[in-house]
Image 1 (tube, rainbow, N blue to C red):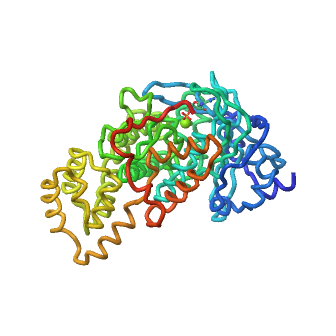
Image 2 (tube, rainbow, N blue to C red; image 1 turned 60 degrees about the vertical axis):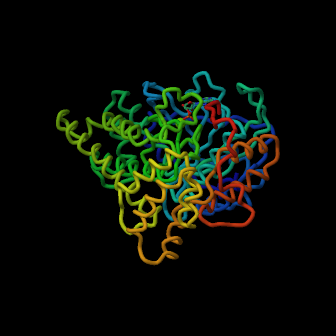
Image 3 (tube, rainbow, N blue to C red; image 1 turned 90 degrees about the horizontal axis):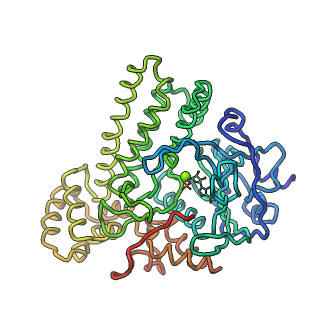
Length: 476
Ligand code: AMP
Ligand code: MG
């Protein structure tokens, strides 16, 4: 027990302050734990000892076993709109909040498990997770972190030694241990609002304000969440990221990206890009993400209306005005981000829009284009180069004078390595079969995405043409 106690000193403000929004629960046993990957950098940030996390007592802790005295793991309650339909009771069906740790910079961080067994929120699910999707969440989270985009991060993935039955047969079970600024979601507020108990909603809002925006009024709190999400989605758009399942329970209050399921980075630029096998209506396509997140934030506004103003009309008017700020804030981040990607001294919305149209029309690889532009080789990516030439001439007219400095500044914001879909699938298939080498190579590439290194050339481009379109599955 003492080993565990010194590895993490858990607080449990969420469980303590919001007893109506969670259920105390314990993690399921694991027959034969094996640590697959450990995030040493993140362990250090949390002020814990990576070497000791690799020992049996540490691995047990990463599965929620042998917790220090006083730890109170809970399954969190939340509701959510899934593909637009309201589900009043979702919650952690296969996850647990172990507790909160104050990191070396004084920040409160959640330590959370995914795949730790059925909870009272499991509905029909088995409470389990499998190696491929948990390594996938770990990998994409590290890629996002490497890109400088706010995200939850994997601390570890541990194989449980258990076989888990999935649609396509038995697969090796795993638990992801992840760290987040919090696991408060829009769906948490929907759940609290639907309880009809004003005190619960007030307590949740107080908790969220204290944690993320100390001192803010409910309306100001809402504004900060709107702005954080507007920026977050802009950052996704700039790197060609498609989340895949932007349900309200997957939209955070912290402004971190959460719950990597059927997500992917797009290859050829196309706003209609969807990867999820279950998103038939293309609701969560790349180009829809800003509008969808704004829609999710409207659900947050509805949930906290009674705290904004006792007069409902006044509350609606105030919240609507703040929600409307999303568009400008988002667009400003996009404009600035695009200017940086193109090496421009100042944003040029029309130039950026015309480029995206060109990339779309000729199905040019999105990530590859910007590095090629800096290197002076972008023309070769176009089957029909003349429209690109005309565009490039317009760009040249508004470039700063020093071309070497421009190219260097572009390479600092345009990733060379993103988790390419075919590479991710290959790495996860190998890992599921027991070979982690391709996973670690890919992880290494995407963890430092801007820095060209020898031996990683295979991670710089899309799959060879002619393969089947990439599809990701929700059966995780
Ligand atoms: P997600 O798609 O991971 O955002 O999960 C959506 C909801 O389904 C959450 O309430 C999860 O806890 C629940 N869920 C997903 N998979 C399982 C599973 N295998 N067992 C129990 N609950 C699950
Ligand atoms: Mg989720």
